[in-house]
Length: 494
Image (cartoon, rainbow, N blue to C red; front, top):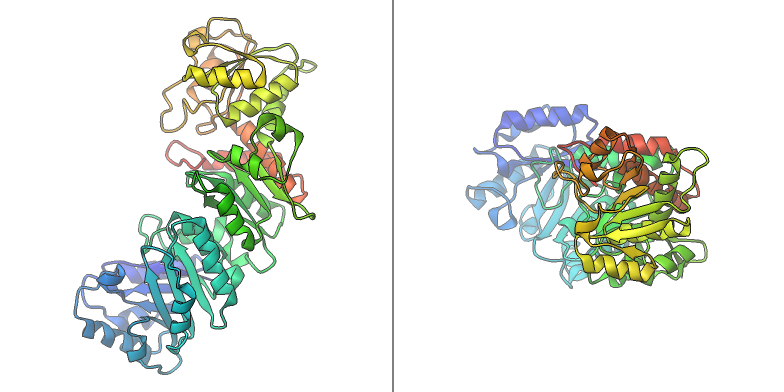
């Protein structure tokens, strides 16, 4: 179950949002009384409540907004209990002075906005002595490991425990706490108004992550990166799970640049079955894997980790195959990549995978990068040519592949390859997929060139990952349409 927090300054708006949430299917709502600009009229808020409620009133010392005396706050909480509200939230330092009464359930809570302390279990044990129906313990995650520690606590608790972490690192615990026994988690009514760091909107928790369908047997997958908040992979995979009726959830997990192995070892307790891997961890993923496949060995980077029945982590690189399949689909029937004179712009992980795939197909490849030394290094490692960035348009090419972020939202008026350098006979492939029609793609079409957008590669690489994760070949057109429905100049999630 998802508890949706409402914090408004006016009673009228709090009531209207409560009704709107009930219409949207919310089953439980938290009324943050400390947000009101005048002393709360509790009767007005609860008499005709459309859903059960948690009454919460936070002090400023707990990052709340209560502006009156503490005696008035305690009186309000006691009144809520006497009035028979469904739940009342009591901080652990005052829970002992507010006695149980009637049927109202007591949530004894503790928040730490700085860290997830080493004495988590001791704190939880002390709270269990305060006559709770539910223990709520919420801390700030400063690493992915904090999430694992918190969820282990939730799973081991004999008292129902709402345990999760705040902040970007804490997101997995918000989404998985129910899997390990938490009676509910928290969301916000509106993504623009969060009650705590890292809180997600109710619509996203319900529709994208399908929180209420996550159970003990739900398989967990994730995308790893730093940063990771921009990733579209959770959208793509979760919608595919829903489309194919797979009991699984896919999460974004931020992994710091220098702690890939340590973080994955700490997350092992969660039983995650597969990872998509993005910047800057593709090399680390290759080094972490127990069984990297041949493509990973040659590329030196992996974008996919998946665990099989043997308990080992296998690694592959779906970027390479997805790019090559995308290019082949755009060539005239019967035409291959063999012998095609190709220039690849960029020298990062995607460029490395695509250059490898092109060389395997027998293409002639030249690399150009804004940092010329990186192009020279990559060309030397893979056994192809390089050209200085300022000379990238001098020679005739059959295929142009852009692996740089130039032209990506919001800088959509930029292109990595001027239009006057293009020949009408070339095939232009832009790995940028937001927007789908980059300036490079638009200008190539104006020249009469064949084109491939980044959505094609993105959908294909995700499809191969999905099949590695689940054993199911997904509907490729469904993946394409999912991306197209989501990206726009004002809504960027990559």
